[in-house]
Length: 293
Length: 317
Image (cartoon, rainbow over all chains, first blue to last red; front, top):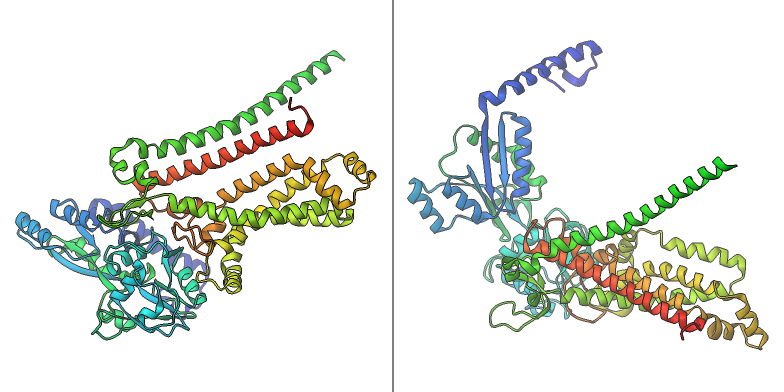
């Protein structure tokens, strides 16, 4: 409802159409003149994990700002950094922080170490069956379980039963994150069963009493979230929204935008929109966690 | 009279051409599909870049996951070092197919023998369409049923570690195979001339002896063809195994382990794979393998059936 329209009272149809015509004409005028006025192009290149997120941001932003054209490509975080160094992209999207040699290359060429902006968080919750006596695991234990080194719950303080592994299909971003972040690029055990989607993993974990699964933290029916310890001495942290936003939950990484210099003009507007409520709402919708507050 | 017969022969000609054309279209379509799949899988043989990751020896022989480690068969296309061994997938496919056929063939043949030889005609008119209706159940429904309901019961019944395993997926697959085998086997049994049965009964054989010793052997070529068709269906079926198998690329023959089939691998991975990548071409290579598998099986079946038919009808020599 528009502000001139308090309480949503019905007006005569003729008045309503006239009211609609004004913004429509304005929009049309904006649309026609916009390209010549502010034909701003922004390119985002980098992380494959972030491609879908970047696309959603770009689509929504372009819809609201018809003068801006945002081009999104993937290729991997490394590709993105190379493109930033070569000057062929405005924003490098990265699922890992910039490495020292990349910083150096950037500094040598431009005299700037770039600007790092955390824009979202990528993380997974580890699921256990409700009846499982195990409540917490260290990151190392989760890694050993999923690479097939630990195969019995007894080794981590549970029942004497085989550990049943549920995983995602290898084309999923969650699979990639888990492999890179938790397994440290080791392979999954061949006995890890791949299911389509987080809901399927949560469902299977709820039906299988000796199973373990992973996925988003929004699915909680008949499963429990495993509290995770970064190492044996750290406290066990559950994947609650509070712990994730504060950065205490350890199965979580930042997703970044890198720019060469402090963003200005349309680039600055886009990035502050991404960081704002609308951009962060899209983060949550796409299945990632909003950035730390 | 003359013009009408002329138009008659013209229309006959048109219909004939039309039928020829339709037959040609389906054959041409098949050939084109094969050419397309074959072309997309060709880089596995020709491109040096792709052969470095997935040459035929890497696809079929064991590889060390990391230097110095024991050699194993691994299907792990998304990894730091991608591994493209197809053996786990072939094992998985054959394992599930074996379970499915062990379940489906006895059931379907017994049902076919019952309906054609023993059932009163009113019952036959009921049973046949109902079993054939089973073929109309979408395989996605069957897969869902296996995943949600059957897996739990099978696990509890046998006390298995894995909820999703080759037994429950194989049985679900078998349910899809039953109507295929049943329909063809029933037709084959019904096609046996009535005189065979009458002769057998007249010689003092019981109905059971007649069915088992006379009708069944006489219908054997058709029954064999039915089983081959069931085999083809089981190997190519995708949705049921995709949902109920667990999709773990394990190279174990144990029916209590989960498995990953060739067809389900294509279905699960083709959607997101980067076009032109090694992974993409290997998936098409799997398609070629599946195509050759079913082609070869059908050919063997045809050959065997033809031989048997000649032998049984006495035109062998």
